[in-house]
Image (tube, rainbow, N blue to C red; front, side):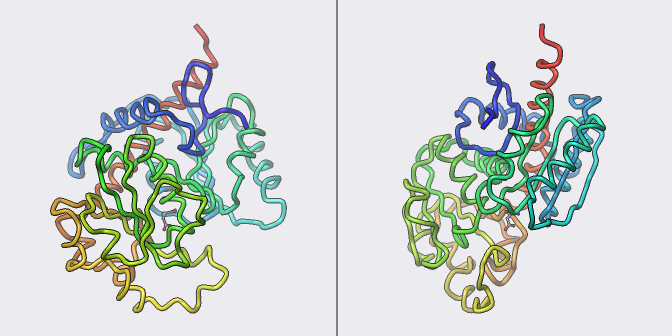
Length: 322
Ligand code: ASP
């Protein structure tokens, strides 16, 4: 696979947080913090992406990620093309490459891609023109790097540290690209106490998340946690989902105000969205004082601006070497 970074360490592509060193992650978080504006403030507007064309190719549904890549690119001065594409199950990589080659011929510089096929972003970075970049906006159940970054940015803003933090991820971890990317980022930044909480059937394979503790009772998993991250059940990634009973799941694993009292008094409640209120989380907790769910959304725009700006800077250096 072509590297995500150039020989000077500049970001060329972003398809996984695996292999990105702490310095590289911290640089993106710092840049994102500089771009972040809270609701009610005027959004940051810059020219970092002036003359750059970004194509958003989403082969899976998306609300937050797609809207925030779109806004992030425009606020930095890019031309943006949004395409909603139907997944075709046959020879998807080839079909997508044709779309990409077509858009490359129209001088597209950065492709933001979401797809349900594992391995596709890697395939694409090996096949795109050398002057073009690929950012994954979600790869199957495997990776969602900008979500991982926005999650750790949100945690950093409140906790100011990663070492010594107790983080519980609760829900359908087996099918969650968010759990994978966020736990990778946390591990790189120094968090060692990661708890995975799920019914047995939704825990990941034993050889994944090696350093994490596993729990099948939410009460045990979130006890004393500094961060409680709730996940949706990814029915679309299951062969058999019809037998799942939402009410029974809420009774056993739903985050309620009573259960939240088991976590640390200052625990953050997070959720990548979309939320199913009354299934994995009660509305009073989702909208309550510990919830940073809307901050996550706010940070999502800032992180995507930071990633796009870092990649654009690398592309510019590559095209105009000193
Ligand atoms: N939005 C997140 C994702 O794309 C989480 C989810 O869909 O449940 O993976």
